Image 1: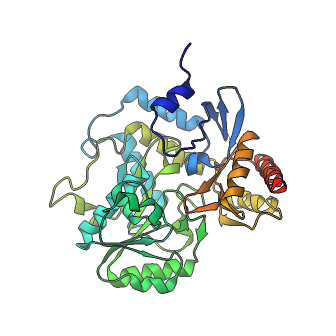
Image 2: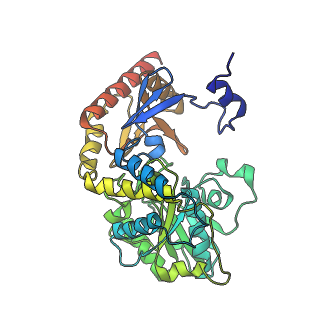
Image 3: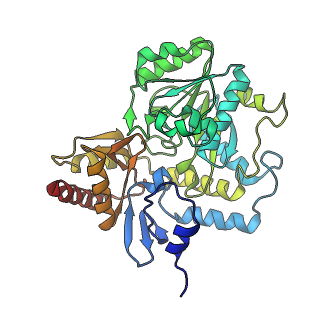
Length: 400
């Protein structure tokens, strides 16, 4: 008897938890996943904010195939002129609408973008202190994990980086903790794993002013929010500020692995001397991933996917009304549905999966349900998704 894929998964794939979903997916298209029995699942979380243009968008697939016919890996990042890299870099710079953010360093992931940005900030400023927010998540490597604002995820891996401090997201009083000793603050415009927490435009303008007063670099983590998730291509664009370093990944690749940190040339060149090769990667900026990313970026603009994000967001908010829903908060297609407990949330999520709808909770807010569908989701699909979610909530809360 042949060993099943499920058995191979259980026997040989390293686990991240003791209760993986273990759905065996054989195909994906648009906003749907299909398992080995042919059952369809509506992906309401985009593989955790990755598939912004949907699964296997035709333009992304075409770009990947065309690049495969030309070349794949040629050399470690930064040595050869490769058209997918330079075209994508130029398009990213243009997308920021900034005169300062003019150089891109490609990585394999968001975590690596965070790591590169931390090194860049310390190298450029000559300082060591970095500030991040409580209940923030910026990655799982030791440097990025040092920034995490939740001790439960960190304690088992100490010692981590020294000189890390935390402040409250959106709290103006805490900005006084940014001093002339601070190399950088790493912050999300929208707190992701804290459960989609918003801060005001005035807060971010005060933050930018404090950074300028102290010489601290402002690193904005748009690994979840970038590429249109909040209704503008970059979330910072709605705050009338500019970062000194911008981080991207997740939705950037159209399903392919890629990340980047973007900064002014005067800052970025710090990594080229004393020592040379101050930051280096073998596979960062892989040409196939870059081709997919450029196609993703172009698709968002060519198909005007940003135009309806707020309308779709409001439809979710209008439809998700139930006595057991405490709040639906968020911006664009980055929403959180707050319930009374993790037990309720987990039961609702499991029931939704049974009914063909995939959702999730948040690392630091497990009493809220994550909604982050592909931007291509239609209004009819939103209505279907909300109906399934409401039925699941009704079923679970009636049992309780």
